[in-house]
Structures are given as structure tokens and as C-alpha cells.
Length: 137
Image 1 (cartoon, one colour):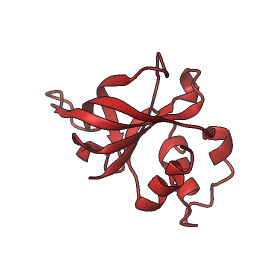
Image 2 (spheres, rainbow, N blue to C red):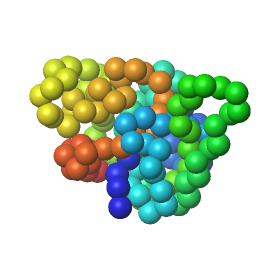
Image 3 (spheres, rainbow, N blue to C red):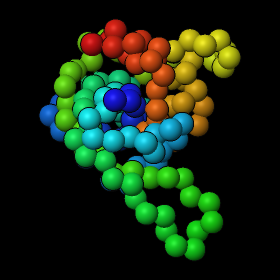
Image 4 (cartoon, one colour):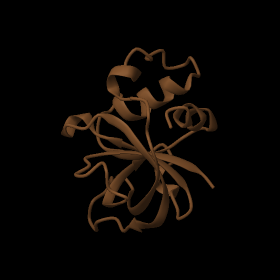
């Protein structure tokens, strides 16, 4: 199974399950599938505080491109079941100092994928980034 992260507006960060419709994907996020692990970040742009949960994808479905639009970012609808709650904070403030894009650190990977272009999205993660995130649970 692969590992992903999603940064989005979250209405209830204490919920046991989440559904995100037609969510933008980048950095391999379009390959997310049922059974995959996903780390959930509540978007600071919408008042969230960053990493808050880890879960398992229950269902994932690609959204068909809109006809007549030449360039479109792939979108996916996903349902996620929470499996753990973050015990340590991790958000923009903690990741911002890691901006040496070619240093190979997992913190830099997360900063690049989530905050270089601050839109909400689903992204694929490296094994090193997943191990780094696991330390927050």
C-alpha cells in the first residue's frame, strides 16, 4: 500500500471518518486507493492547525475531467476512516524553516508539497516522510 497526505478544510477534526469530494491531487496523489494510509492536515488557510490524524482510505474514485477544459488538475473523491490522532503539532510554522528544497529531509518534502503552493490537495509521500509523520502519533 502507498502513503499519502491530504491538506484541506476540516469541519470536525474529532470525527471518526471523513469524506472529501473532487479533491485536487499533486505529486502522485491521483493514485490514492482503498487501503492506503493517509495523513490528514487541517488547512491553516481555513483556520486549521496542521497534522491532526492518520487514517485508512475506505474508498477512492477519480473524478472525470470537465469537457472542453484543456488543462485540468486530476481530482479524486475519497472517504477516510481515522486510525490515530496526532500527539505532536506539525503545521506551517514547524515546516517553514525547511526550505532548502534539495536537502532530502522529510520536513522539506512536506513543506514543498503543502506550502510552496498553499492550495488544498492530496499528495503522495516518500517512505522517509511517512516515517517522520509516524513520530507525531
